[in-house]
Length: 254
Image (cartoon, rainbow, N blue to C red; front, top):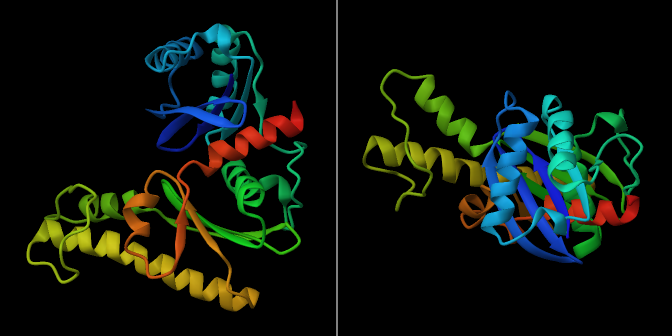
C-alpha cells in the first residue's frame, strides 16, 4: 500500500492507495510543535482504524505547506513503516511544465492538484482548491501550469468576522435558507458561504476572459462541497485531487 500525506495549514490528510484505488482517507489536525513520536502514534492509530498494518506500507509520498513538519513527518513514517517518503519539491518529476516566475516556489499542494486534474480529466483545466486558503490554478492546452490566484478561505472569513468584531459570534459552516438573512448567525453564514460562491464564480469569469476560453472547472479540498453547490458555474467536485496527484507523482518518481 502507498501512503500519501498532504500536510496543510489546518489539517493533515492521509490517503492509502492499493494500486490506483484510494482505499481510505483520514484527517488529523496540524500541529507544528508535535514530535515524530507523537505523529508516529497518530499515523499508527489512523492505519489501525482503517484496518491497515504499518508493515503493509510499501511506499510513501509527502506534500507539505508547513516546512517545519517535513522532517518530523519523514522520521515518523520511517520509524513506523520502515520506508522513506518521497517529498514533493524542487527537482521532482511532475510531467507538467511549471511556467511561473519562480517554479521552485510554487506550493506542492497546487502542483499535486494540477497533476491529478491533468491525468484524470485532461487539459485545459481550472482547478479550485478550497482549504485554509482558496487557490485557483490554470493548466493550459499544452498541459503546463501557467499560474494561480490565492485568496482567503471560507474558514478564514468566518474566523475573521468573529475575531475582528465585538459582537459577532463563531458559527457553524452551513448555508442559511436565504441570502438576505433574519438573524446574526444566518447573516454571517450568508456572507461567508454565498459570498465565497460569488467570488469563485466571479474569478472563473475573469480567468476565462483572460485565457480567452471557457475552461472546464474542477473543485477539490475539504470545504469545496460546502461552497460548490451554491456556485452558478458548472463545477465538477473531486474532493481528493491532491491525494490523487500524490499517487501519480509517486509512480513517476519511485
